[in-house]
Image 1 (cartoon, rainbow, N blue to C red):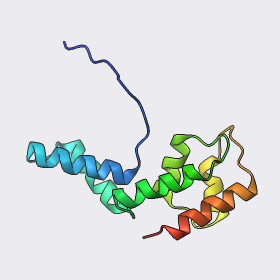
Image 2 (spheres, rainbow, N blue to C red):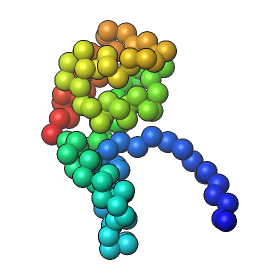
Image 3 (spheres, rainbow, N blue to C red):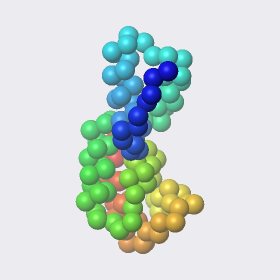
Length: 115
């Protein structure tokens, strides 16, 4: 059996996942059963294209919010919260605390880059 070595682990957003699935499908001509299920799921939920999601990620990172993690930024891009309550849901169960002012900055950045 082949030994697999994990080189890098990082969260990716749903738009990035959609793009990767498309490249796998074009390379292999078709997806596996699970690949098709994931594609169906992603197609229902993705609101942004990959380029806009990367722009939004850059905007959120440029806000210099202390203690925010890459996985939280990715989840913000996936959910695209429109208000503070939706954004608070991203941080539920986390030990990270984000100030009200920084949350408003995230919502503002999110709303400027929508669709």
